[in-house]
Figure 1 (cartoon, rainbow over the protein chains, first blue to last red):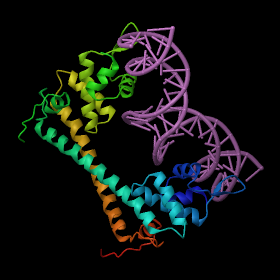
Figure 2: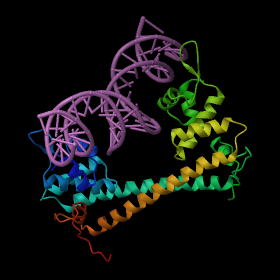
Figure 3: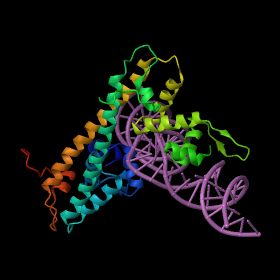
Figure 4: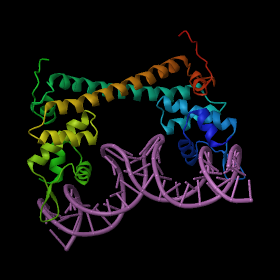
Length: 135
Length: 135
DNA sequence: ATAAGGCTTCCAGTCACTGGAGGCTCAATA
DNA sequence: TATTGAGCCTCCAGTGACTGGAAGCCTTAT
């Protein structure tokens, strides 16, 4: 299989697949013409990677997960640990974004947004409390 | 003011302040000895940047916001537009993370996480539906 | 005189790609 | 058979927003 077909079937762009080879996530063989020659197992690996990345796992985590996937004597606890840690990281990010969101939406709501220059958003960023504290 | 004091008072590390100068966000003067010499206005700008960055605004947005801040004839609508766009981007990110979170927490819950090798997390990543669909 | 700490610049690394240039190979068509 | 055009190759550079480290000057205190 050439890279184009693999890209289509795995949903991962050719550039990214080449990058994954560069960092040793996949090791396709080569045809006589120098083209990469992918097997079904390579395709599976790439699809695996695509799903793991879509869940937000880092490349480092993907490497670990792939390793566990290919290790038949793995313990599911190891997989779960990786996933739980990632889940915690996601929760942290969500919390951080929600905190930003709250502050920002407050500010947006308090800004009249017309042709006048006074703006509570800028006042807040400038460090001047300009909003009613009591909410 | 030397960079150390500005760093302390603005909460932005010296490295980052130097970086901000490099990309022309601040333009401190120089003392005879080559040291950066910050004014109060520089400090205010940096504090402004710190707050904007803490709200997740990109450097590009920060540049725009700073420009609006310093433009006394701005219209608050311009500021609000930048903020609203950012708010939308935040909402998108939150939604994406929550979707990941949901899938992932499902998988984590379904994995027994012991010394046995079978693992629904890996099965899912491998593309084999292994979970009860009905929840 | 010396030592510690702060300041300087410059270079490289992070993360996970992505874009583009320049050039080879392959399949189909005139 | 010549020529397109698409697909493939490698290599280099850029993204965003810093961050770490090396090598070296400046200042302050002892």
